[in-house]
Length: 262
Image (tube, rainbow, N blue to C red; front, side):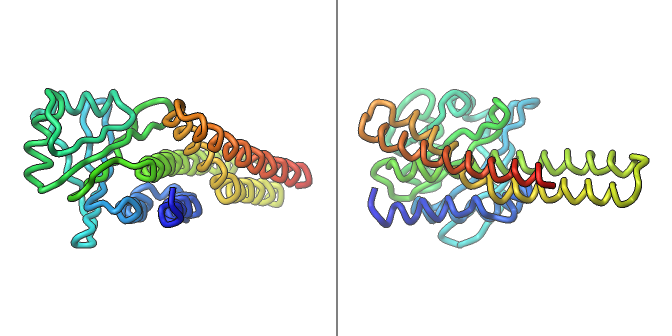
């Protein structure tokens, strides 16, 4: 990967420090992430669709258009028209389609979506959360000759952060309920304040210090799966995984010591 490519991937990784990500502000983070993903992959459009398992539909959350430099509600794929394509999205981790491809699953999509919108190619990655399909992240190109390792790394990192942002949102809801329970405890006011301060400090440290190495580890695991047959790439990624795991271990040790001191 060239230095320029690495810089583009690094721009995505930097979003692990996003206040919206750490604060569980899901829609704000998607608004922040989509332009970065689109520009890093030199795409024409990026979008995120939330999967609703109860209705078996992809709900359009947001789309970013690089040509107009604007964000809007994403363009959802019509399930009735592209039923076989929808099934493909749910079965494969990555889907990459060139406008000239011809198959039962892709024919209607390529003809009615790519060609109609003057697209050369389209790629998607599944976003998982708590062992279930959570959504689809997609990038579209008006001119694209291949689907590079850089594109994969950008999409893997972005998908990982989308899942983590939703986790942060759930943690905030749990923290709110926990604080409500704490307020009902019949303890002295000073003890209550001390407990709330410890909870707040712990949540802040977890979000700011653990999130970065954890995001990188999750992205590296996905990349190892994708590069399983390449011994050289596998060894390099494994070494990076070891380094990030050690960083995470050090961070947890510091956090544990801090809790014990408090």
